[in-house]
Length: 122
Image 1: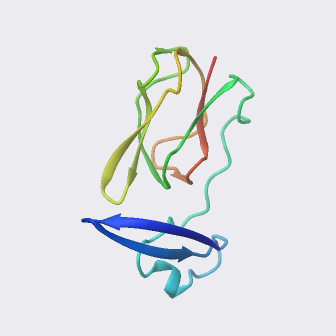
Image 2: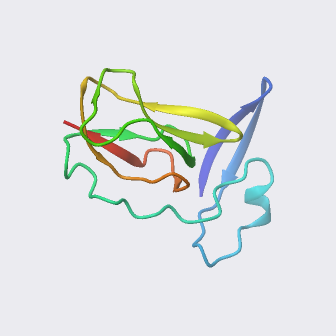
Image 3: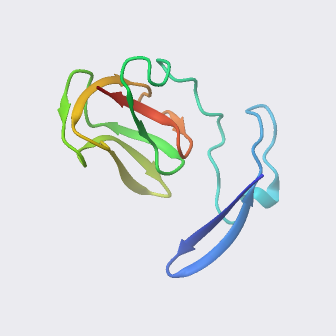
């Protein structure tokens, strides 16, 4: 179980989310305040950190909406690398420092968890 505080229109809600397997039915109480992705997070396309030493991680759980870069692109600190969609909002996942995109570990439409490595940089 994971506990989260979610703020909607200035009102804070404390929610508890239970992680279940893809074949299990989600617990009704866990879906009440903030729905979690129904599918389990896919395995990364490349081992995290295998191609690059700097990890670019999702800041929230959601779905990969757009790949803003491709392998080999140069990025500056703060440049969007991947955009995820969570609760009808597009959230850019930005480069933590200047570098070159070494790997993209997700595809458009993939579910992702908060903290999941979506790309790596050199």
